[in-house]
Length: 297
Image 1 (spheres, rainbow, N blue to C red):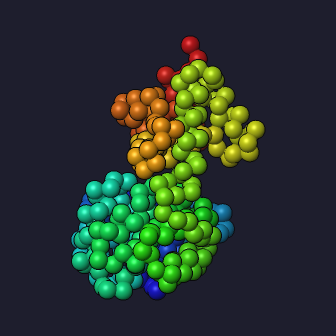
Image 2 (spheres, rainbow, N blue to C red):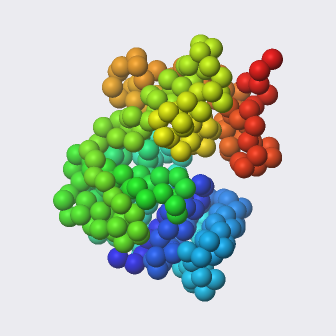
Image 3 (cartoon, rainbow, N blue to C red):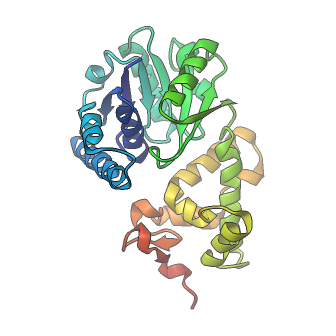
């Protein structure tokens, strides 16, 4: 397998393209917006520069990796020769179902279709195609070039051969693949999102402030990043969407997103991507300070 197509050039999409290209795969990166593709390539180049500075990548390796990536705005042209397509579009069920139906029609019969979804059912996505045995989840972690885990999700009909191929491929990327079954949130977000939601509830109820909550979890639980900062990093809108998938999928009120999270997303305070969440990122992520609304009076 050498030809990979990645759909979506946002944070996850460009990270996935980066990882494959760096390992010598030919990558077609697809987005409907040419400006988004240019931004993605600039991000990939900048992230590779960091690797060069750290000595984990040579300048020649960087240039070769960048040459491995071709950008497209035309989906049909991008997937024609693909042996694997990794979808990293918006975490929206309707968008994914429409896209996988298109992919099923456009891709060769043997092409494996993977989704980077963080919570949506692989079985439901696969049902939009005529090849459910070739549909699988590849849930990469952010930032993709750095994080080792790939959560490999088997849908109800995913074949053993396809699962084995994706596990092996993930290992060739220098990742550690972990096979899980198809339930809402899988493993990572079924555990993580209720914790983040509880941290926001703790803030909402006035038990402690943002910095205090994050400090307790970092120093007391050995977490590298507190849950509120992590929520900002993931995107509060993404956290909200995943919690709603969990709530709908399990029908359990323990997954209900708290009012503060809903209000922040409604107000457009989404974390790093919007410049403000629980912290203020206007000075960059290295200079984070408590957002104005959460500063002590």
